[in-house]
Image 1 (cartoon, rainbow, N blue to C red):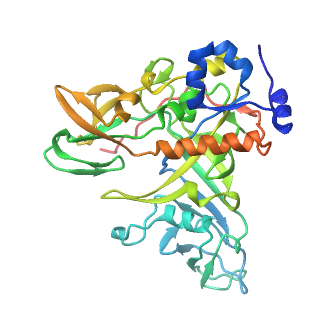
Image 2 (cartoon, helix red, strand yellow):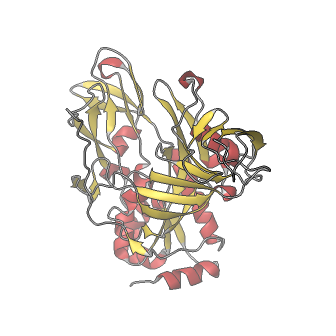
Length: 382
C-alpha cells in the first residue's frame, strides 16, 4: 500500500495522522513487520542534537542616520563578515573573539539573539559619498533587526567516526578531550534517531524538505558541504561520515533551548543545534529503512593523535558505544557522546507533537539530493 504527500497532509490537517518517532518504529516493525506498520503510520520523526560547526547566521541591521557601509563588524566582540552589502553580515558559529581563551564565539552570539538577549554591535567603514558615517555602536536584539536567519552549510552529518588517542599525552579536539593511551573514546551521532541514518540514501529528503530547525521551521536548502556517498555500507547505512545537509530557517521563530553556543576545551567555539526531519511513510520501504536500530548501525574507531592518515582500528555499533564502555584488544575503554541522545529524542517528540496537532505539514522536495558525491582533498603547494 502506497501513500502520497497530499493524502498524508490531508490527514495532518484533519489531526488524524498517525505519527511515530524513529525510536518507536523499531519495536513496531519487529512486532508487525514493515508492510503492516507502513499501513498504520503516516509520518516518522527523527532528531539529532549535537555540535554543528559549519553553521552561521545572516543578519540585516537596517540603516542608521546618517548611514554606514560596514566593512568591519563585531558582535559582542566576535568578528562578523563585512564583505556583503552595507548593513548585511554573516556570523559563523566557530568564529571566536580576539581572545580565544574567552570561550565565547559566534555560536554564543546566535544563541543570545535567539534567547532575546541584547548584543553589542560595533562597526566601522571607509566612509563614502552615499555612506558617510565611519563608525557606529548599538545594542541590538532580534526584534530590532530586519532579517535574521540561520544558514548552515553542513549539518546533520550521516554517521561519524569514533575518536581515541594512542599517544602518551592528552589531546584536545573537536571530538572533545581524548586521554592518553586510549583511556577514553568519544563519538557523535544520534544513531537510530539520526535523520540521515533513517533515510540513508535521501529517498524522501531533498531540496525543499521542511524540517524542525532549532525549535522552529526550516528547510533543506542544498546538499551540505563534504557530501559523500562513497563510504562502505553495513545494513544499508554508511560506516563513517557521509551525506550532509545545508539548512536554512528564520531565527525569529526559533527556541533557544534547541541552540547552544559551545566552548570545546582546547579546540575552539561552535554551536549545538537540534534538527529533526519528518519522513513521510509513502511505502513499506520508508518504514523498513527507518526501523534500523543502534545494534545495526556501526562506526569505525580512529586514532586522533595522528594528524593525517588515520586508519580504522576497530568497529563498534552504537548500542555498544551507548553502553558506556567497549572492549579493545582485551581492554575495557570508557565511551562518551559528543551529541545528546536525550536532546535528539526531545526534538523527535516535539516534531511529532507539532504534526499530530496539525501545526506542521510536510513539503515535497522540489529537487532530489545528489545520488553521487565524493570528497576532494586540498593539495598544498610545494
